[in-house]
Length: 156
Image 1 (cartoon, one colour):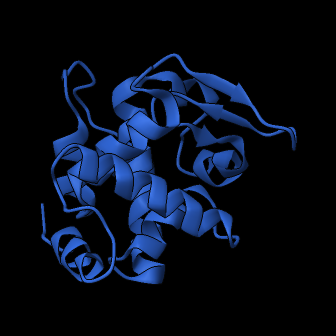
Image 2: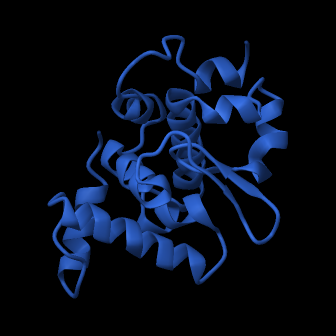
């Protein structure tokens, strides 16, 4: 394994919780990664979902098969997506790409799922509600939206 694959994937795949390590490595928020895992699969590492458009989502973070061609360039293949820790690292990489594109914002969080409106914003709101339910941010309404955005920007 070389190149991006070695940066995306940890060498010790037996770690019980890769969220903090993957978030730190990609400089994204670990709470957001955990919320995405809950939204996508309810933390089920074996989750596989075939979408109406023919694509397939894999693993705890539901990495979509549309990314396989790009990931294959770095030695990441379909079976890799079913390995929980690698799946989280790949998700952190994908979230980092969205943060680089949209800034450290709810737009980036929504773009993890879809860059198409209104799906992007609806997804971001779902993740925001999960994080708020966990007590990590206040419910996003009115003036509380600014507080939520500030909390999101806190580095892991």
